[in-house]
Length: 82
Image (cartoon, rainbow, N blue to C red; front, side, top):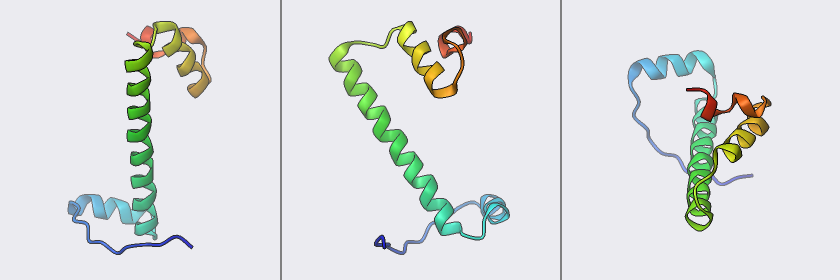
């Protein structure tokens, strides 16, 4: 079992109302959202370190990554979505 710590979080009332419509387990929902945000920030830091060491990602690399993540073709990537 994972250790837990009880904290108090203040949210706007309208967000709490919508949150309660989505789930009966507010703690679990918030914990999942926090975990997702932490992973996002860690990945961003890793990508930044990579680019500092190897240079900026090329358009081709970005399109290839986009295709792998979202299942599209390379021409559907973010660089061509202008």
